[in-house]
Image (cartoon, rainbow, N blue to C red; front, side, top):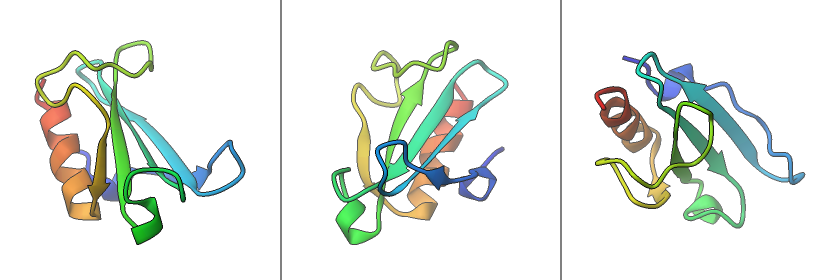
Length: 86
């Protein structure tokens, strides 16, 4: 299982914060960001979105129907595990 440690963060395209995308063998993936405008970013926490097989955000999974904010590194790993089990 891939975890938070497998994420490779780069500067966010909007010029502030960090962003990482990671695809999984089951076709899904995650986008994980931390900026001053993301949910929890000002507190040093992460926001995660589930990605479909084309790398687009999807809100149609049993994991979530929205982005998930205010996540610690451990919580990001837990959600990543759920996405990998889809």
